[in-house]
Image 1 (cartoon, one colour):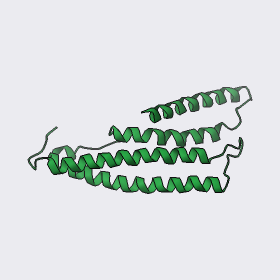
Image 2 (spheres, rainbow, N blue to C red):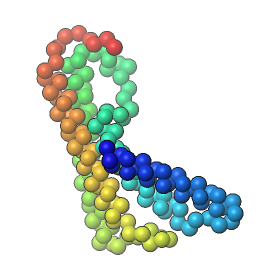
Image 3 (cartoon, rainbow, N blue to C red):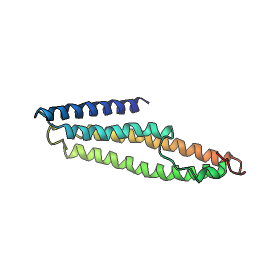
Image 4 (cartoon, one colour):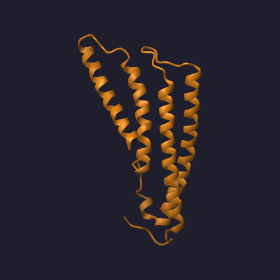
Length: 157
């Protein structure tokens, strides 16, 4: 929850920074580096909130057809979906750590303010672990429900 709140703070900082930049442009005094700071905050903001969204099953889900199936079939489909998402996000998480390490090796910095990129890259990589963990938990819960649910008729929501 605290990571999602940190992402919210990032959103607020990004909003006020953009507002100040727009007002500054009106007076021919824009804030230098607004775009690069906004890009860095946006990357962190997304990864900081995605684990929270996953654990609370807040991602978009189209269930027009799915609700007509039995609880067991729904749980089985959820298990398959969470397994695919888990494997894909584990791959993304691994690649994020490799990218963060690469940013240290190359001493990558932003162009204008010369902010090192590697700390932001590591925040994103560490936050992605939380999404992978959330997906793993959802996978286990869905698999458990698929095994223990009765094979009966539709739930009819």
